[in-house]
Amino acid sequence: MSVEIEQSCTRSGDLIQLVGLSHKSFIFTLADGGEFHTHRGVIKHDDLIGKPWGIQIFSHNGSPFFLLQPSLPDILKNTKRATQIMYPKEIGYILIQLGVRPGTRIIEAGTGSGSFTTALAYAIGDNGKIYSYEAKEANQKIAIRGLEKLGLTKNIEFKVRDIREGFDETGVDSVFLDVANPYDYLKQVKLALKPGGYFASILPTMNQVTSLLLALRRNDFAFIDVCDISQRFYKIEPSRFRPTDRMIAHTGYLIFARSVTIDHDLADQKLLKEIGVLGIEDEKPSDMEDFVEAVEFIEEK
Ligand SMILES: C[S@@+](CC[C@H](N)C(=O)[O-])C[C@H]1O[C@@H](n2cnc3c(N)ncnc32)[C@H](O)[C@@H]1O
Image (cartoon, rainbow, N blue to C red; front, side, top):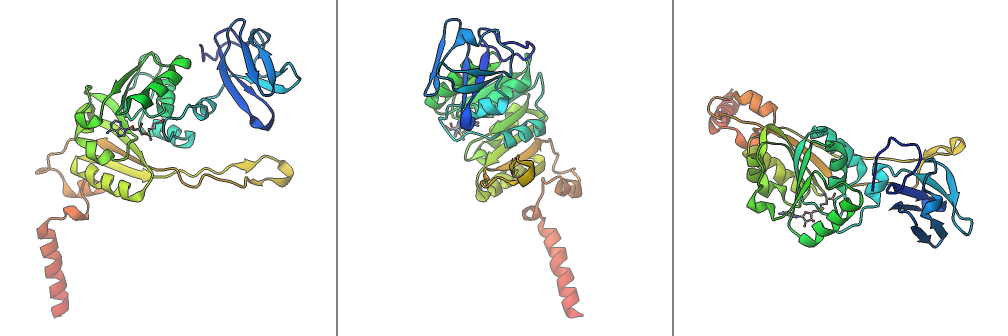
């Protein structure tokens, strides 16, 4: 299997995508002598091998298809689901915020269906490394099978483990947690991350986010950001250009932070507040005493 983009014509072993009527899409690997069967007819692999990308082809009964190299979003959409998977709109932003680039060493948990793992494998290049942890072996097996089909497992170490037990690695560049309770594992994350390393998580509900915010503060994570990403598609008819009727309203909140080292006795309290390490719950009793005194003084006057 190959997802290389250099050649202009298909070769045996290439991952291809056929897109037919009603946007019906099929992604599979070309093999000499193979046949692809669909309810829209049969297509011989040999009739596709050596053809230029982007052309229209027909099945034995005349159904039309376009012959394409699958894009990463198409591959992600095609992920066999063992769990909820992540959407390209979030994946793209997370990769940028986590600083993922060729050579990055990153831990993720859980592997789930492997959709984020797939995008990571595209991004880390030949010299990067992914350590993918998953508590449920059955889920990880499905993810591994999908990634093997894409030929993307070379730089991934899969581990079946509850991350409560910690990570084997230290000094990694980034950690990404897609689990329901990331706030319970920040001590483990801290030990694995290099100083200044990047942390991110995705959570569906606000109460999970607030628990994570408090835990990030308690574990000396700073530069904390929370956002969500809305994406609206448009009907591409120039004479009646308008939004499509349906939209995915909510997927998840994204939480980002950096692991920092703080000497709490010496650190400047104002700066700690500014970078999100201290919040109102951390205000010293002396601050509150000053505040109460000031109020009493005003009331007396
Ligand atoms: C929402 S899925 C992850 C989806 C994945 N990011 C993807 O893009 O396909 C969450 C996964 O985390 C795993 N998980 C939950 N808690 C865990 C833990 N403490 N340690 C390891 N894996 C865990 C679950 O079994 C599940 O497979």
